[in-house]
Image (cartoon, rainbow, N blue to C red; front, top):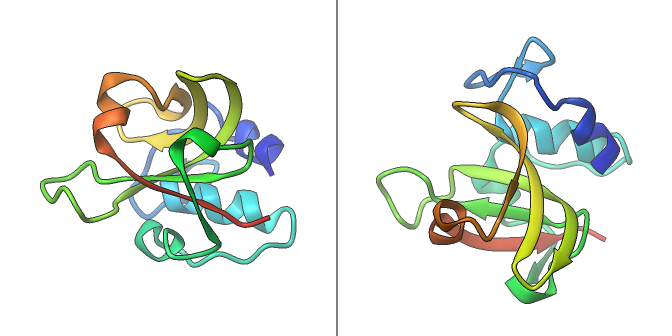
Length: 123
């Protein structure tokens, strides 16, 4: 699943996009989990209700992370997949960024740390 997500790195962001021509964050999760026969809803808000709750300090590769990056500090509107864990302050996730396209970022960067809302585990 993480390999599938990584294969999209460099794909441009497109709101509502579901292909390698342009993809949004929830479609990236949808396709990545589908590659391992796990069905997810299409929106990040609905995806954030799937699986089991995970504490931030217990994140593992393959966990889903969810953010509120819009005006509402509560509404989930962004998602990613944990791709590697390198220690207490190094949790990398793959996501479709509106400015960078599909990329890998550190959850502990000030921007994402502030916007982080929850994590879920499917396995």
